[in-house]
Image 1 (cartoon, helix red, strand yellow):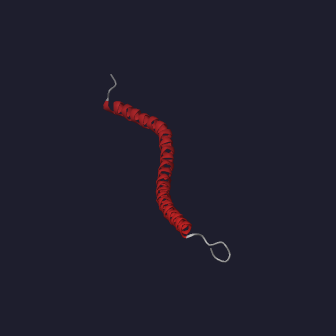
Image 2 (cartoon, helix red, strand yellow):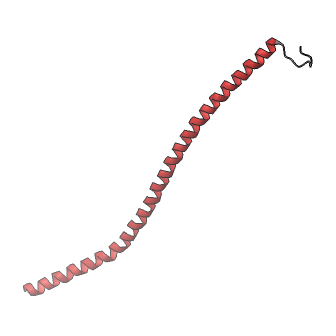
Image 3 (spheres, helix red, strand yellow):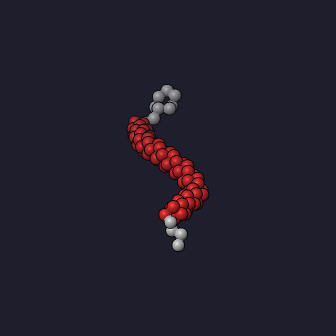
Length: 98
């Protein structure tokens, strides 16, 4: 004991130091695991951002395809009308009047 009565016996001091060392090793292991987990989470966030960007682009592509589909119907009718007119004109010019 020291003059103030707060000195630990040698065995207790060794035990305390051992526990502190074990705690430091454990904390270092936790920090390493946390760093790895943070890195993996960051990579997954990047992948999710890329996936979200892809789905956003696909949503735009489907809108464009929908517009193309809406335009294709009347366009097909116009082309068919043109074809019928050409066939009619060819029939008249070719003498198919029987």
